[in-house]
Image (tube, one colour):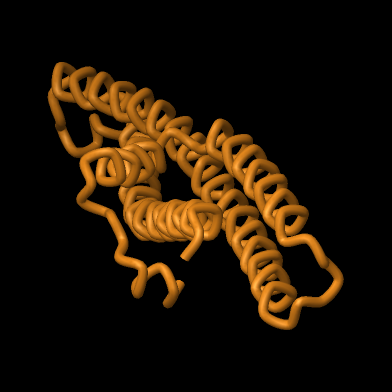
Length: 188
């Protein structure tokens, strides 16, 4: 296998890992988000009930005023916590949408790159269109650079919650723990 094709396939492997990381990150946080929202709604509802219990209402049950003030204070703290949590949930929700969006972008890029490689190999085998194989190799190098640039643009926009997955992939490649044999690269 030529070095150009190896480089192309390694880029495809990296894109595939990153795409999976983006989708998995989004799914993982989405399930956690549902439970966080339920807890948030419960605390918001509970704090509204406590705030509705004013001094006159509680005096019917002969409850001491200091307990009322303490309860209202706790309710206010809960309201503040719920407000802060809601902001964080919205931010996380936005990042999840971005994860899915960038995952689809990388998936499209991956399919496109596979098509380019398939065309290259088809021309190489059937000796069509390109009489000079050097021109064909130059074409593939150009495509490799183009896909790498497009891929890096997506990576730069990657949401914070997906960064750790991407960084682990890059670290694995750098350490050689994600090296692929020629047979494995052929199966991609």
